[in-house]
Amino acid sequence: MNRPWQKNLINIEPYTAGEQPKSDDIIKLNANENPYPPSPLVQKAIAGFDAESLRLYPPMDAAPLRRAAAKFYGLDPEWVFAGNGSDDILATAFRAFFNSPEPILYPDITYSFYPVWCDLLRVPYKTIPVDSSFCVHTEDYYIPNGGIVLPNPNAPTTIALGLGEIEELLEHNTDSIVIIDEAYADFSDVSCVPLVKKYPNLVVTQTLSKSRSLAGMRAAIAIADPYLIKYLDAVKDSYNSYPVDAVAIKAACAAFEDREYFEETCRRVIATRERTAAELRRLGFILPDSGTNFLFVTHPEHKAEDIFLFLRERGIYIRYFKKPRIDSYLRITVGTDEQMDKLLSALRELC
Ligand SMILES: *Cc1c(COP(=O)(O)O)cnc(C)c1O
Image (tube, rainbow, N blue to C red; front, side, top):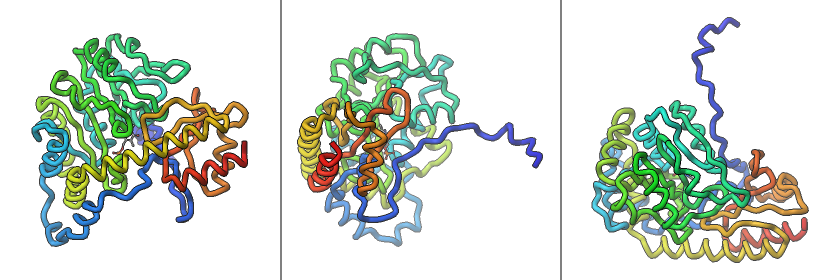
Protein backbone atom coordinates (compact mmCIF):
# COMPACT_ATOMS: atom_id res chain seq x y z
CA MET A 1 0.00 0.00 0.00
CA ASN A 2 1.20 3.51 -0.76
CA ARG A 3 1.57 5.44 2.49
CA PRO A 4 3.29 8.70 1.57
CA TRP A 5 2.52 10.13 5.04
CA GLN A 6 4.51 7.38 6.71
CA LYS A 7 7.68 9.49 6.79
CA ASN A 8 5.90 11.85 9.21
CA LEU A 9 5.01 9.20 11.77
CA ILE A 10 6.95 9.22 15.01
CA ASN A 11 9.95 6.93 15.16
CA ILE A 12 10.32 5.97 18.79
CA GLU A 13 11.31 3.08 21.01
CA PRO A 14 8.73 3.08 23.82
CA TYR A 15 9.51 2.28 27.43
CA THR A 16 8.97 -1.37 28.41
CA ALA A 17 7.52 -1.99 31.85
CA GLY A 18 7.78 -5.17 33.93
CA GLU A 19 5.47 -7.96 32.78
CA GLN A 20 1.94 -7.97 34.26
CA PRO A 21 1.18 -11.58 35.25
CA LYS A 22 -2.08 -13.16 34.13
CA SER A 23 -2.60 -15.19 37.28
CA ASP A 24 -2.88 -14.20 40.96
CA ASP A 25 -0.49 -16.76 42.45
CA ILE A 26 2.56 -15.19 40.80
CA ILE A 27 5.10 -13.64 43.15
CA LYS A 28 5.57 -10.32 41.39
CA LEU A 29 8.97 -8.81 42.10
CA ASN A 30 9.48 -7.07 38.74
CA ALA A 31 8.08 -3.53 39.01
CA ASN A 32 9.35 -2.21 42.36
CA GLU A 33 5.83 -2.06 43.72
CA ASN A 34 5.34 -2.01 47.49
CA PRO A 35 4.33 -5.40 48.96
CA TYR A 36 2.21 -3.71 51.65
CA PRO A 37 -1.17 -2.06 51.13
CA PRO A 38 -1.50 1.71 51.32
CA SER A 39 -2.30 3.28 54.70
CA PRO A 40 -5.68 2.37 56.22
CA LEU A 41 -6.46 6.11 56.00
CA VAL A 42 -6.30 5.76 52.19
CA GLN A 43 -8.76 2.87 52.32
CA LYS A 44 -11.03 5.02 54.47
CA ALA A 45 -10.75 8.04 52.19
CA ILE A 46 -11.71 5.99 49.14
CA ALA A 47 -14.55 4.17 50.91
CA GLY A 48 -15.95 7.49 52.11
CA PHE A 49 -15.54 9.21 48.75
CA ASP A 50 -18.67 10.98 47.61
CA ALA A 51 -19.20 9.81 44.01
CA GLU A 52 -21.58 12.67 43.37
CA SER A 53 -18.68 15.11 43.64
CA LEU A 54 -17.20 13.53 40.48
CA ARG A 55 -19.75 15.58 38.56
CA LEU A 56 -17.32 18.47 38.96
CA TYR A 57 -13.81 18.85 37.62
CA PRO A 58 -11.13 18.31 40.27
CA PRO A 59 -9.31 21.33 41.71
CA MET A 60 -7.20 22.54 38.81
CA ASP A 61 -3.93 22.68 40.72
CA ALA A 62 -4.52 19.65 43.01
CA ALA A 63 -4.21 22.19 45.84
CA PRO A 64 -5.21 19.81 48.67
CA LEU A 65 -2.46 17.40 47.63
CA ARG A 66 0.10 20.21 47.38
CA ARG A 67 -0.90 21.34 50.88
CA ALA A 68 -0.69 17.82 52.34
CA ALA A 69 2.75 17.20 50.81
CA ALA A 70 3.99 20.66 51.85
CA LYS A 71 2.85 20.01 55.41
CA PHE A 72 4.64 16.65 55.44
CA TYR A 73 7.91 18.36 54.44
CA GLY A 74 7.42 21.53 56.48
CA LEU A 75 7.26 23.75 53.37
CA ASP A 76 4.79 26.29 52.03
CA PRO A 77 2.50 24.86 49.32
CA GLU A 78 4.02 27.16 46.63
CA TRP A 79 7.09 24.89 46.79
CA VAL A 80 5.10 21.84 45.64
CA PHE A 81 3.81 20.70 42.24
CA ALA A 82 1.51 17.68 41.75
CA GLY A 83 1.06 15.33 38.82
CA ASN A 84 -0.18 11.95 37.63
CA GLY A 85 2.80 9.96 38.81
CA SER A 86 6.37 11.12 38.55
CA ASP A 87 6.53 9.97 34.94
CA ASP A 88 4.00 12.70 34.18
CA ILE A 89 5.92 15.23 36.28
CA LEU A 90 9.28 14.34 34.74
CA ALA A 91 7.86 14.66 31.21
CA THR A 92 6.42 18.07 32.21
CA ALA A 93 9.76 19.09 33.70
CA PHE A 94 11.69 18.02 30.58
CA ARG A 95 9.38 20.26 28.56
CA ALA A 96 9.59 23.16 30.97
CA PHE A 97 13.33 23.11 31.73
CA PHE A 98 15.25 21.35 28.98
CA ASN A 99 15.12 23.78 26.05
CA SER A 100 18.82 24.34 25.46
CA PRO A 101 20.76 23.38 22.32
CA GLU A 102 23.33 21.88 24.74
CA PRO A 103 22.67 18.22 25.63
CA ILE A 104 21.15 17.28 28.94
CA LEU A 105 23.18 14.79 30.97
CA TYR A 106 22.24 11.58 32.75
CA PRO A 107 24.05 8.31 33.53
CA ASP A 108 24.32 5.62 30.84
CA ILE A 109 22.76 3.17 33.27
CA THR A 110 19.64 4.70 34.71
CA TYR A 111 15.86 4.91 34.47
CA SER A 112 15.10 3.96 30.87
CA PHE A 113 12.30 6.49 30.51
CA TYR A 114 14.77 9.40 30.14
CA PRO A 115 15.89 8.51 26.60
CA VAL A 116 12.24 7.93 25.65
CA TRP A 117 11.27 11.47 26.69
CA CYS A 118 14.36 12.95 25.07
CA ASP A 119 13.39 11.31 21.78
CA LEU A 120 9.73 12.22 22.13
CA LEU A 121 10.40 15.85 23.08
CA ARG A 122 13.50 16.19 20.86
CA VAL A 123 15.76 17.09 23.76
CA PRO A 124 19.45 16.53 22.91
CA TYR A 125 21.20 14.35 25.48
CA LYS A 126 24.54 12.86 26.38
CA THR A 127 24.90 9.85 28.64
CA ILE A 128 27.71 9.82 31.20
CA PRO A 129 29.08 6.33 31.91
CA VAL A 130 28.90 5.08 35.49
CA ASP A 131 32.13 3.34 36.60
CA SER A 132 32.63 -0.43 36.58
CA SER A 133 30.97 -0.67 40.02
CA PHE A 134 28.02 1.39 38.64
CA CYS A 135 28.94 4.45 40.72
CA VAL A 136 28.10 7.94 39.49
CA HIS A 137 31.01 10.39 39.72
CA THR A 138 29.72 13.92 40.03
CA GLU A 139 32.87 15.45 38.51
CA ASP A 140 31.93 13.82 35.17
CA TYR A 141 29.02 16.27 35.11
CA TYR A 142 31.15 19.41 35.27
CA ILE A 143 30.84 20.01 31.52
CA PRO A 144 28.62 22.36 29.49
CA ASN A 145 25.07 21.03 29.50
CA GLY A 146 21.45 21.97 29.01
CA GLY A 147 20.36 20.33 32.27
CA ILE A 148 20.91 17.23 34.38
CA VAL A 149 18.56 14.48 35.49
CA LEU A 150 19.71 11.95 38.04
CA PRO A 151 17.79 9.46 40.11
CA ASN A 152 19.05 9.25 43.68
CA PRO A 153 19.32 6.39 44.55
CA ASN A 154 19.98 5.43 40.94
CA ALA A 155 17.89 2.76 39.24
CA PRO A 156 18.40 -0.06 38.52
CA THR A 157 21.79 0.05 40.29
CA THR A 158 20.31 0.86 43.77
CA ILE A 159 23.32 3.09 44.61
CA ALA A 160 22.76 6.45 46.33
CA LEU A 161 25.01 9.49 46.23
CA GLY A 162 25.46 11.38 49.51
CA LEU A 163 24.09 14.86 50.01
CA GLY A 164 27.62 16.30 49.86
CA GLU A 165 28.12 14.88 46.36
CA ILE A 166 24.76 16.23 45.18
CA GLU A 167 25.69 19.65 46.56
CA GLU A 168 28.95 19.55 44.61
CA LEU A 169 27.03 18.67 41.48
CA LEU A 170 24.72 21.64 42.11
CA GLU A 171 27.56 24.02 42.85
CA HIS A 172 29.26 23.15 39.55
CA ASN A 173 26.02 23.47 37.60
CA THR A 174 24.47 26.74 38.69
CA ASP A 175 23.67 27.57 35.04
CA SER A 176 21.33 24.63 34.47
CA ILE A 177 18.38 22.94 36.06
CA VAL A 178 19.23 19.79 38.00
CA ILE A 179 16.40 17.29 38.50
CA ILE A 180 16.91 14.70 41.23
CA ASP A 181 14.42 11.86 40.77
CA GLU A 182 13.76 10.58 44.28
CA ALA A 183 11.44 7.70 43.36
CA TYR A 184 13.27 5.54 45.93
CA ALA A 185 14.74 8.07 48.36
CA ASP A 186 12.34 7.04 51.14
CA PHE A 187 14.17 3.69 51.29
CA SER A 188 17.56 5.39 51.70
CA ASP A 189 18.84 7.85 54.27
CA VAL A 190 19.32 10.67 51.77
CA SER A 191 16.82 13.20 50.44
CA CYS A 192 17.57 16.45 48.61
CA VAL A 193 14.32 18.09 49.71
CA PRO A 194 16.14 20.20 52.34
CA LEU A 195 18.42 21.55 49.58
CA VAL A 196 15.67 23.25 47.55
CA LYS A 197 15.85 26.36 49.75
CA LYS A 198 19.56 26.68 49.06
CA TYR A 199 19.62 25.87 45.31
CA PRO A 200 17.06 27.70 43.15
CA ASN A 201 17.96 25.44 40.17
CA LEU A 202 17.15 22.16 41.98
CA VAL A 203 13.97 20.18 41.28
CA VAL A 204 13.23 17.09 43.39
CA THR A 205 10.59 14.64 42.17
CA GLN A 206 8.95 12.05 44.39
CA THR A 207 6.25 9.50 43.75
CA LEU A 208 3.52 7.92 45.85
CA SER A 209 3.84 4.74 43.74
CA LYS A 210 6.64 3.08 45.65
CA SER A 211 7.08 4.08 49.30
CA ARG A 212 3.38 4.91 49.73
CA SER A 213 1.99 1.86 47.91
CA LEU A 214 -0.13 3.82 45.41
CA ALA A 215 1.22 2.71 42.01
CA GLY A 216 -2.31 2.01 40.80
CA MET A 217 -3.43 5.52 41.63
CA ARG A 218 -0.98 7.77 39.71
CA ALA A 219 0.05 10.59 42.00
CA ALA A 220 3.39 12.28 42.57
CA ILE A 221 4.93 15.59 43.57
CA ALA A 222 7.84 17.83 42.65
CA ILE A 223 9.50 20.15 45.12
CA ALA A 224 11.39 23.24 43.97
CA ASP A 225 11.64 26.98 44.32
CA PRO A 226 8.22 28.58 43.64
CA TYR A 227 9.83 30.36 40.68
CA LEU A 228 10.33 26.97 38.97
CA ILE A 229 7.00 25.54 40.13
CA LYS A 230 5.32 28.31 38.11
CA TYR A 231 6.98 26.98 34.94
CA LEU A 232 5.77 23.45 35.67
CA ASP A 233 2.25 24.84 36.15
CA ALA A 234 2.46 26.75 32.87
CA VAL A 235 3.45 23.64 30.90
CA LYS A 236 0.84 21.49 32.63
CA ASP A 237 -1.87 24.08 31.97
CA SER A 238 -0.83 24.15 28.31
CA TYR A 239 -1.89 20.60 27.61
CA ASN A 240 -3.95 19.37 30.57
CA SER A 241 -5.24 21.74 33.19
CA TYR A 242 -6.59 19.02 35.51
CA PRO A 243 -3.79 16.54 36.05
CA VAL A 244 -4.70 14.71 39.27
CA ASP A 245 -8.23 13.34 39.54
CA ALA A 246 -10.44 13.94 42.57
CA VAL A 247 -10.20 10.38 43.93
CA ALA A 248 -6.41 10.37 43.62
CA ILE A 249 -6.16 13.71 45.41
CA LYS A 250 -8.18 12.37 48.37
CA ALA A 251 -6.20 9.14 48.58
CA ALA A 252 -2.83 10.86 48.18
CA CYS A 253 -3.65 13.38 50.93
CA ALA A 254 -4.56 10.52 53.26
CA ALA A 255 -1.25 8.82 52.45
CA PHE A 256 0.69 11.97 53.40
CA GLU A 257 -1.31 12.36 56.61
CA ASP A 258 -0.34 8.90 57.93
CA ARG A 259 3.33 9.48 58.67
CA GLU A 260 3.51 6.64 61.17
CA TYR A 261 2.25 3.98 58.76
CA PHE A 262 4.53 5.28 56.01
CA GLU A 263 7.59 5.13 58.23
CA GLU A 264 6.68 1.68 59.53
CA THR A 265 6.22 0.14 56.04
CA CYS A 266 9.47 1.71 54.80
CA ARG A 267 11.24 0.24 57.85
CA ARG A 268 9.81 -3.20 57.09
CA VAL A 269 10.85 -3.09 53.45
CA ILE A 270 14.35 -1.98 54.46
CA ALA A 271 14.66 -4.77 57.06
CA THR A 272 13.55 -7.39 54.51
CA ARG A 273 15.94 -5.92 51.95
CA GLU A 274 18.92 -6.18 54.29
CA ARG A 275 18.09 -9.76 55.30
CA THR A 276 17.58 -10.80 51.65
CA ALA A 277 20.81 -9.12 50.56
CA ALA A 278 22.76 -11.03 53.23
CA GLU A 279 21.17 -14.34 52.19
CA LEU A 280 21.86 -13.69 48.51
CA ARG A 281 25.51 -12.94 49.26
CA ARG A 282 25.70 -16.25 51.12
CA LEU A 283 24.49 -17.92 47.90
CA GLY A 284 27.33 -16.34 45.96
CA PHE A 285 25.45 -13.39 44.50
CA ILE A 286 27.27 -10.09 44.15
CA LEU A 287 25.31 -6.89 44.71
CA PRO A 288 25.84 -3.27 45.68
CA ASP A 289 24.36 -1.99 48.96
CA SER A 290 20.85 -0.88 48.11
CA GLY A 291 19.18 2.39 49.09
CA THR A 292 15.97 1.36 47.31
CA ASN A 293 13.20 -1.24 47.56
CA PHE A 294 14.99 -3.57 45.16
CA LEU A 295 18.30 -5.38 44.73
CA PHE A 296 20.60 -5.41 41.70
CA VAL A 297 22.35 -8.76 41.65
CA THR A 298 24.70 -10.90 39.58
CA HIS A 299 26.02 -14.43 40.07
CA PRO A 300 29.48 -15.44 38.84
CA GLU A 301 28.38 -19.02 37.99
CA HIS A 302 24.89 -18.54 36.61
CA LYS A 303 23.74 -16.50 33.65
CA ALA A 304 21.25 -13.80 34.61
CA GLU A 305 18.86 -14.83 31.87
CA ASP A 306 18.94 -18.46 33.09
CA ILE A 307 18.12 -17.38 36.65
CA PHE A 308 15.33 -15.16 35.34
CA LEU A 309 13.79 -18.05 33.37
CA PHE A 310 14.31 -20.56 36.21
CA LEU A 311 12.39 -18.29 38.61
CA ARG A 312 9.75 -17.50 36.05
CA GLU A 313 8.97 -21.21 35.67
CA ARG A 314 8.44 -21.30 39.43
CA GLY A 315 6.02 -18.39 39.34
CA ILE A 316 8.48 -15.76 40.57
CA TYR A 317 8.80 -12.74 38.27
CA ILE A 318 11.88 -10.54 38.49
CA ARG A 319 13.38 -8.14 35.96
CA TYR A 320 16.10 -8.94 33.44
CA PHE A 321 17.40 -6.21 31.12
CA LYS A 322 19.02 -7.48 27.93
CA LYS A 323 21.09 -4.33 27.64
CA PRO A 324 24.78 -3.48 27.32
CA ARG A 325 26.73 -3.44 30.62
CA ILE A 326 23.87 -4.85 32.73
CA ASP A 327 22.88 -8.05 30.91
CA SER A 328 24.54 -10.18 33.60
CA TYR A 329 22.43 -8.50 36.29
CA LEU A 330 18.93 -8.96 37.64
CA ARG A 331 16.66 -6.53 39.43
CA ILE A 332 14.66 -8.04 42.28
CA THR A 333 11.97 -6.01 44.04
CA VAL A 334 11.82 -6.47 47.82
CA GLY A 335 8.54 -8.21 48.64
CA THR A 336 7.22 -9.47 51.97
CA ASP A 337 9.44 -11.71 54.12
CA GLU A 338 7.36 -14.68 53.02
CA GLN A 339 7.82 -13.86 49.31
CA MET A 340 11.55 -13.40 49.79
CA ASP A 341 11.78 -16.77 51.58
CA LYS A 342 10.19 -18.41 48.53
CA LEU A 343 12.60 -16.60 46.25
CA LEU A 344 15.56 -17.65 48.38
CA SER A 345 14.53 -21.28 48.54
CA ALA A 346 14.13 -21.40 44.75
CA LEU A 347 17.58 -19.85 44.38
CA ARG A 348 19.08 -22.35 46.85
CA GLU A 349 17.79 -25.09 44.58
CA LEU A 350 19.55 -23.47 41.63
CA CYS A 351 22.86 -22.63 43.28
C1 LIG B 1 9.01 4.16 39.30
C2 LIG B 1 9.89 5.29 38.90
C3 LIG B 1 9.35 6.52 38.51
C4 LIG B 1 7.92 6.80 38.22
O1 LIG B 1 6.99 6.39 39.04
P1 LIG B 1 5.48 6.84 38.87
O2 LIG B 1 4.73 5.59 39.15
O3 LIG B 1 5.25 7.34 37.48
O4 LIG B 1 5.28 7.90 39.87
C5 LIG B 1 10.22 7.56 38.23
N1 LIG B 1 11.55 7.40 38.31
C6 LIG B 1 12.10 6.23 38.67
C7 LIG B 1 13.57 6.13 38.75
C8 LIG B 1 11.28 5.13 38.96
O5 LIG B 1 11.83 3.97 39.26
